[in-house]
Each structure stands twice: as C-alpha cells, then as structure tokens.
Image 1: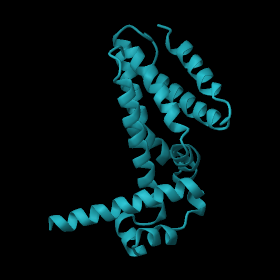
Image 2: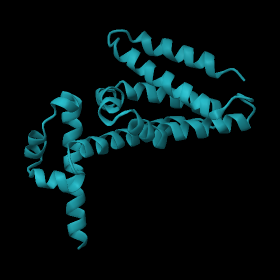
Image 3: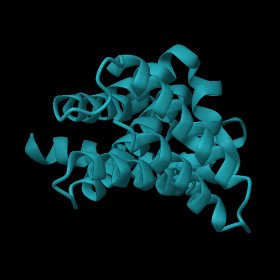
Length: 192
C-alpha cells in the first residue's frame, strides 16, 4: 500500500513538473495535454485521476509556483532580525523571483486570466498576502505604520509588487529597473 501511494505521488509530481515547463514555454492556452502526458510517459487517464482536467493541473502548478516563491521570500527575509529589514528583503526577493519566466507567465499573466480573479486572489491571499500581512502587523507592534489598516496596506503593497514585477519584466535589458523599483519601495516603507 505504501509503495502505491509513493508511486501515485511520483506520478503526480512528474506531471506537475512537466506541466510547469509547458505552461511556462507555451502559456496555458497553447500547452497541450497530449504533449504533457506523452513526455511523462503516461495516459490522459493518469492526468485526470490526479488533477481532474487541464484547469485542475494548471491550478496545481500555480499553487506550486506560489509556494516556491513564498519559500524564497521567507528565506531571504529571515536573513535579518530587524522586522523592517525583513519586509524589505522579502519585497526584493518577491520581485526578483516574480520576473523569472515561470513565475511571470504562470502567476502574473496566465494565473488571473485562466483561474479567474476570485480564485487567483484567494490563492494569493493564502500564500504571499497572508505572510505580507503578518509582517506588517509585526511592524505595527514595533511602532511602524500606526493608524494604518494592515489589510489595506497588504493589498496596496501586494499590488505594487505585482505591478513592479510586470514593469521590470518588460525591461529585460534594463537592469536598473529593479534598482529603481527597490528605491521606491524603500522610500515608501521606511516611513514610520
């Protein structure tokens, strides 16, 4: 029984990994389920068993990319003991990671369009926005941003980071775009 569960998880993981590559390279609309299952050496039945359909597979890929991005942000933020510096390091890590081809295509371009705004937003709230809000609440406990709503600040900063990642991605030959973005973020966040 244990081996069957392990094999099942290996199958699901293999499909997820291949789908992530295909969704990154071709986008959701042009990614072919036939190519994904053929490359995995499986049948469509295996895909349907684990993910239900193409949309279910894409949603699983979005969740995996969000979790990976969240781990990177958390890892970078934990390099400091200062809560404000943690927020700044986390913001920079998010923007840097979000402009990678996989995160950009899957999370910021196709994610909202394919999953719909409500579903995409719920997934974002369960991952990145939840951690962002927690950090902002910690900062308020340390005297920062008093009188400001953590919920409003979270959505404002999340939107700014997403839009900044899209702006930077449009400028692949302008490395100063990240520096300019971080200068604005630093300016905004350093105010008590």
